[in-house]
Image (cartoon, rainbow over all chains, first blue to last red; front, side, top):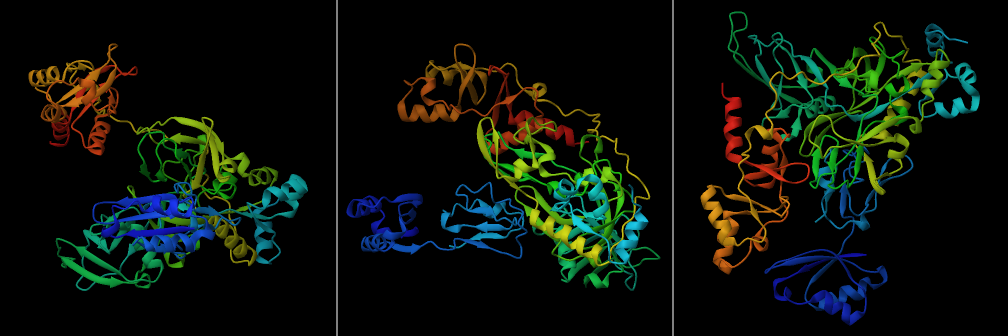
Length: 128
Length: 502
């Protein structure tokens, strides 16, 4: 499961992820992050079973945690199943079913945004 | 055994014709043999749905009162060609809006009209005795137009190159996003469903042949522009009534970094008259071969990395230099299927009869490149061959002296063999002196990743490279990376000014 962590200014200097890894022993995979002096966000991937425990610990450290769900917004009217998004996605979120209709496995999405401008029909956007 | 087109049309009219799609045909032929398939099948429907940039429509708006002879006109701020009479115009699919750029263009005007949306017409004229009006603004629906006739000069390529990008920069092309360092492969076309792939000799497809276009009925006008059937790249010019079309089969698109284009569904029903036709329509994705071309090379003749079949392209990955590279199309196979199925139903319902070409297309024709009388200047012609260089172990102080003496801002850094290993600029030198004094050597402060150009490239490419990298000079290198000159943005600026000023 992927968690989207928003880090407020007060705790921006804390080694949050390292602390939670030490405390819980759960291996946390940091997929994307942006931290500067005033705010930041971190996208992590963790085993599904650990979701509640990790969230609780993170919240104790003063950050906001949101489970990342339905990250890709797919406009089914605009989409013509052309497939231009398939090979450019680093996470292999997009694929075809047997009928050559687009399938979106968006629990793999890391919000990189590469698919948004790559869609010729402006059928993709990211929830955020 | 042979069948005639009249026999087939009679069966279509009485509802007894056997119609299959080009996707179903190969297995039928495998099962029944060629003679058996000829007896069994009357019509094979084909279909494709993809970006067809060379498309557009003629309009007649009717006369206003007082009348105007439109000299220039815009539909939703997209200019249409008005260099024809009075209230006629042609809108091209790729023409971009004057206000929204790539977000809206001719293709969007066509989709809006076909979707029943209102479009604003603006026109201007100098005014004449017979057409006194000078300006006009009105809102129009497709129904309000006397004619809206789609005429697409170049549609439905027989086959198209698959593309990749071996350069170190992501490219935005009409084939979609091409990731750097052979990051992906993009292809287009419906493979075994493609109309021209099922009639590669153009024995059935030619002028006057009825087709499915954008959801309505249309016809083949004849040979398309840039058609090159001799080497497997035939195209068609097609026409159809925009008023019959629907947005399921006509969609505007905006391709980032490239522009506006129109996706169209196009299908051609092929009468099964003899075993040659049976054989041609039994084509499979495994039989249709195209090339994977490197779009990282910004030239007309781009290097072919390998040949590939549509079956391999559709599998999702293709091997290049020992690595599996992911593929994806930019045309829609699910929609191409829908075109072929829809057309099949229309023929089965007796609503669509076939015809042989009234004008055949020369299948031996080969497309030629442009004859250029004024050759594009090459880097060699404007570069400075008296380039001042420095070696990596010299002191920054020496570099400063050379920069001053040479009255230049860029010093290519070379190794003992004269090969380029870096570059330093006056900025690098100043920064280094302020920070570390002048004790450092050139190799400690130089930029190691140098953007270069070769002497035989067009100056336009040099200009693009300077702009993309936000730099003001390019070392010119030969094939073994020896520095043979330097190209300055200033020289390039002078040249481009000279070229465009009369």
